[in-house]
Length: 456
Image (cartoon, rainbow, N blue to C red; front, side):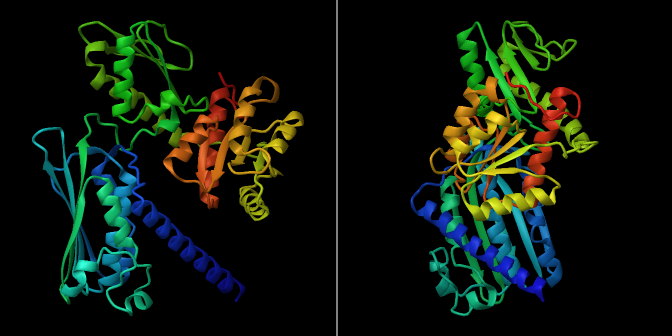
C-alpha cells in the first residue's frame, strides 16, 4: 500500500513536471527564443532511436510500426537533433495514443537545394487512428486546443504539444501541416532546412565537452581557417572553453613537435597526406585541412571512445572518492545525499560559495557538485575563485547542478571554469554516469586508480 502511494506521488510529480516543461517550451516559442543547437548527427540512427520510444505502447495495442527512410536521405546532416527528435516524438506519441489498430508509419525523404549543399529533410507520420474532424484542423496547432472536450480526460495531455512542435519546426527553418479524415487516420508532415554533413563523424557526434583543443600557429591566416573549420563541424567550443579533464586532448599546429599525452595534428604544406607518424601525431595537408582535419580528429576520438566505453567500469573503485555538494535548498541537499548514498558514496554539504572555499582550505575533494544560484556567493563566482587558487586548494572536478537549462547557461558554466553540467531534476542514473565518467578520466590521467587530476 505504501509503495502504491509512493508510485502515485512520483507519477503526479512527473506529470506536473511535464506540464511545466510544456509551458516553458511554449513560452520560449512564443517569445521567439528557441535557439537551434546544430551539430552533425546520423539521421537514420536518430529516427530509429526516436521510433523505439513508442515500441512498447504500440506493441501493447498490437499496432505495427513502420520505419521508411529513403535512400536519398544523407547519412549525416548538420542540424539540431534534439529539437528534431522532440517534434518527432510528439507526433509519434500522439499517433500511438490515438491509434488502436492498424499501423503507424514514419517516412523520411530528402529534397535538395540546387543552389547549395543544403536541402529539406522531410518527415511524415501516418497513422490509421481515430482521425480528426475537418472543422477542427484549422485550430489544431493553436495552444491548449483539444479536438473535443473529452479528449483531455480520456487521453491526457495539455494541448500544447502541437503548438510547441510548430514553434520548433519554424525555428528550424521549416513548416508543419496535417491531413486527416475521421475514422481513417491522420498524416502529419513537416520539414526542416539543414546542411548535408561533409564530414563523417562515425556512429555518433563528437561532443565538444569530451575533447580539448589547443591551437598554435605561426601562420595567422591558417589559424583563422582552422577555426572556421572547427566552427563548421561544431567543435570550436573545445577551443573556446579549454577543458582540462577532457577525455581526448589535441594540439593543432603548423610548427610544434608532439607533446606527451596530447595527440598532435601537424598541418604541413606537403603535396600529399602522409600517414600518421610514430607516436601521437597525425599529418594533414594544409590545402585540404577543411576536409581532412575533422577526419583526423574524428578518427582519434572514436578510437579512444571505443576503448573508453569497453573499459570504463573495469576495476573502478569509487569508495575513496571525496565529494562536496554546494546547495542552498535543504530538500535538494537531502536528495543529492540520498542519490550518492545509493551509489555507495558519502559527501559533505555546504550552503553557499563562501562555505565551499572555507571547506577547501582544510579538505581536498575530487568532485564538487555546484548549484549555480546560491546566497552570498553563487556557483559561477565560486568556480572562478577555485580556479584562481588551484595551486593552494587543489583542482577538483566541478559539475554544475542547476535548473537553468538554456544553451547560454551551459556556456556560462564552462566559462566560469566548471567541467560539466547536470540539469535539475537529477536522478540516480544521471549522477551514476557522471561519477563513472569523471572517475575514469581521473584514473586514466594518472594510469592508476588514484582519483587525482592535474590541470595545466
